[in-house]
Length: 545
Image (cartoon, rainbow, N blue to C red; front, side):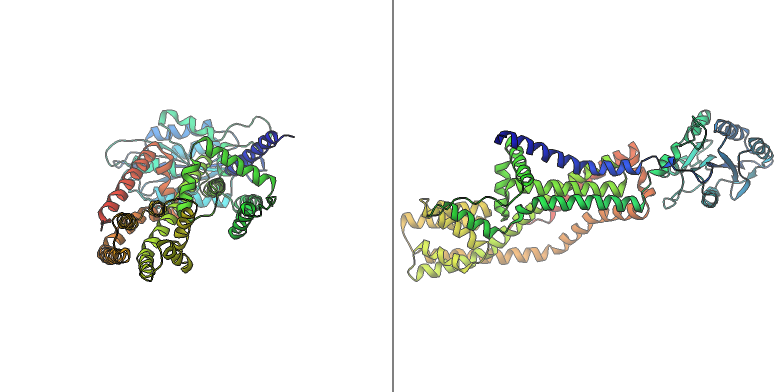
């Protein structure tokens, strides 16, 4: 087998492994939505009809159109579905327990009487119907509400436990149809106009053969999260994660050993390169990631950022770690939300942004540490120069102090100078990597001193005094702006924390936000305003010194 063929096979194997990790959330969702209704049902399906019996004027019965709609819905149901009847106005009443006798239901419905008042007993009626379904344990069970929700006040904290279908009417301004639609959306039910009542019966399709028939409602109930399913997915993903860590363990070898190997390879004795102790799959995955970076012209930029952050990893290794993080988050979000598409997209986006944020934070911390160490470093260089040392010897003293990251950066500058580069250019490179304006001024002073002469030690001491004054002023400004920064952090974190809290404790309250078109538009608009607010607050609390 040629090297090219081996590379192609390895590339295909790596792609297959990545696709397998990304397919895990979809497999979990498919397992959740498996036809659980194929298992033997404990009892026949049950529908509880909640009929609004209130009337606007005393002496009138239940509106005839509601009774007709109820009979049309019941007649469209399969014969094995049991139907119960509850009427409600300001209170509720169970008129008929679930039964398959349609004539008995029609008789009770004709005899039902209305009362003057409003529809505020709807929540108590739903609670009673849900309790009855829990006792009967039907497979499946649903509620059907026929109402105009007059004078009903919305309850965002009310979470239905079973699917609720709604047949609404509207007569005047105090009819709260929005609350009925919210109940249907929160329970994954349906809303149908009175003329389309039979369409709601499709939740219980007629059986094609004798025996218990699977229904859409049972399949919908099968999509609910179950702890055995979550545990199984966690075990599968944990196994895949262990396999990935085993394949990538050669990438986490100690950096001192790797540095020694490289020195031995290119040192004076020209020691032969030792074969890398890593598996074929790891080498293939790293080669595939490297080829992907080269094809997108991003390898050099990522290598520079890793160098600035002081991370001793290659760009290919960092890309592989990012891919593993994205796969882990995608699996976790899919299990938590039960929406495979959302879990995969959100996991990939959050994983990529998170790894990029980690890199940016590492760069910022390393540059801040270098900025804090620079006055002491220059003070040491000035003292060494005054003692009679040359500039390279003074910088070597800084390296021997081994205060990171300053020691590592100046050691790199000395190495560049020893192979022929100008010392000023090497120091300018440090200023560019560390984004240090103070070091750029120092390099400018060194260039001027070399051209016109003068006491470099005295120049460096004056520069150090200026740096320390600026550092003092910077700390003073940060102390004065601490209250504003703390307020900005709270305002940024508050919507995220509240959203996570309601998602965990009252998911039905947030369901319309990501299950309806209007909710998605609101969510996108809120995200845009959130980003604008973050940028504005950052500009307001950032003070240049």
